[in-house]
Amino acid sequence: MTVPLLRVEAVEAAYQGSIVALHSVSLEVRTGEIHALLGANGAGKSTTLKAVSNLLPAERGQVTAGRIVFDGHDTGRTSPADLVRLGLVQVLEGRHCFRALTVEENLLTGALGRGARRAEIAGDLARVYAIFPKLEPRRRTLAGLCSGGEQQMAAIGRALMSRPRLLVLDEPSMGLAPLVVRDIFEQLRRLNREQGLAILVAEQNSTVALQYADRATVLDVGTTVLGDDASALRRRADIQSLYFGEGIAGSEATAPVAA
Ligand code: ATP
Image 1 (tube, rainbow, N blue to C red):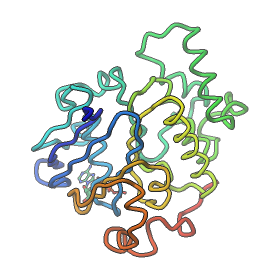
Image 2 (image 1 turned 180 degrees about the vertical axis):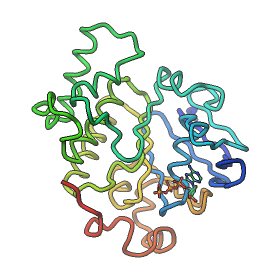
Image 3 (image 1 turned 90 degrees about the horizontal axis):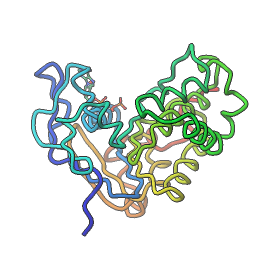
């Protein structure tokens, strides 16, 4: 059996010392897979991802039990910047872009700290534009003036500029039109299939996530309640009503739409 790229073992986490957000979260991301982290609002998806990238201390949170290992490194003992250098790169919830920078400047920030040469960076930029062709004509546009979908693509593109081995995404579908969501997931799958990029993606939109994922983990009130092949979870109609509330998660028709 191969060693997983990321292992989250019975993690418990709290904010401000007393607000317990995670009770017992366990999951494994294997090399080369797309792994979906599913759950309703407040189930603990974002907290889990922040724990993975060691970003909880920045929000007065901490892992209080369990451990997280990325490629042999205990993430709790590795700075977020070092985790990026090791290949664990996260796109935070909410399409984080530098709104006052152009799209291309946003992408270039992803290459900072890698000490890459100019030719290498130019090659990486070209690859990002090949994955998200809609970004190229917008390269000199301020990110703040771009559509929600373009901002999400720029945020993912910036992460790609850091040359991740594990790309961690927090609700990339949030606030985007269904067609834009599909476009983004199609490109993520292409990156996964063609370049072997492992992806851990938290989503409330379980229908879309399960369509593109290889495996998935379901959280409920800060606890892992299910983990299986995505195909098996797709067949279980009860999952929607059990964990997401009927008609909420996965319903593209009810997803809020942005330009
Ligand atoms: P959402 O889709 O709404 O982001 P989620 O599944 O990502 O939901 P989390 O954001 O991880 O869930 O929240 C898990 C719990 O932790 C919730 O009860 C939430 O109120 C709490 N929480 C999240 N962030 C903080 C914070 N910075 N300080 C205190 N409590 C927090």
